[in-house]
Length: 472
Ligand SMILES: Cc1ncc(COP(=O)(O)O)c(C=O)c1O
Image (cartoon, rainbow, N blue to C red; front, side, top):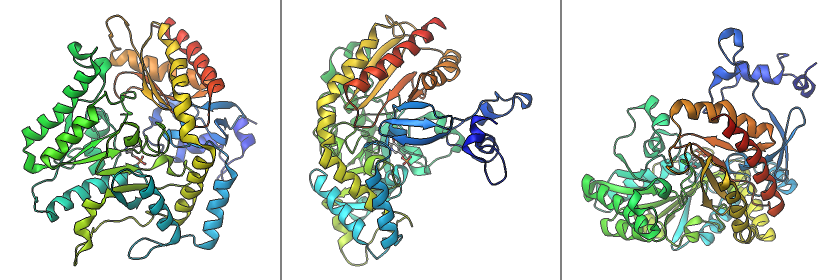
């Protein structure tokens, strides 16, 4: 009997690993690795995670791992919180489901009120979804309709940044700037244009040592794109506070202030896509506060419930809602499960934990120590850059540190998929080795961890990266 069998079998009598290989379609996953060697696959077994406690997770063989990615940038308060499970059960008993289609329920009302109170400026109107991609999709639709209602029917285009990920529905995917995620589904929704991101490590050479000048340059690319496309045709700009994909690009000083000016000048809506960065990831409830700007729309999801139940939201300003207050005008858009009562109840209980345990302050106080710990890895020749903010960091790997030369596709494949992902997991650290841009390792742990865990994560990274160097 294998360890997997010890966990149990499915109703059809297969081990979990075999049934996963044969029946489960995993997301963004190359299934060939699981196929038997005899059929041309690699014969690997999918890791099966069965339990979580705090910042630790456990697989089906009972092995323990640090959850260095909070699941998928989600589990802010850590795993195994009884009170969140109880909040879900209590709500399911009282009212398991009701939609927000011309009706309301108490938990959605309470949560909308609480999010509005936490959001900056006049962002007071909360439209619930079931996740982040739907929130992004909703924001583009709102931007289009808002401009139509306010006398600018030609404004439908959107601008976002190179390599940024904004979700997979076809509108959100058009906004996404990762070629590999887009090309199989082209043609996508027309009207989505890309500008450079804020990767200063690979920015124009003459600007790399001047953060403010680089920020100004990057922001002005947005103005340039608006001018190229015609201001009368551009509806919105979608930006993450810290761009995830590509490896944690924080905004240079002054960047968002200049973007805000540009958006105001051209009557273009600024959408802060905070699906990852909100709910304490950077240290505030909404990360636009961390970087001192007020967007027109915030999109958020993931950490709102710490993943104990799915929900997302688009939070819009009073100005954007104003045209919807009159006559027969309405937003013809919605999701059956948007603002699900169980998820809304869990979100309220999750935010109670944030307040009671002071999680945002904890992140603010400990982020410098987390960064400093990871920066000790910069003595390794393979580590080119450590960047990020709050509890959200990317470590860029390079072939030649002096020239910043990166790996070619074959080397990157061998290093990240062939070695690093598995080696990190074998070393007891679940995190992400990502090659959607230049190769990076990404960390986004539960917000509850502190210096002891930073040191543990760094030492595991050091031993695996030291081994990785030997393969080069
Ligand atoms: C910035 C951003 N926007 C949108 C999404 C899509 O969210 P979801 O996977 O919940 O649809 C993600 C997911 O990681 C994201 O990081």
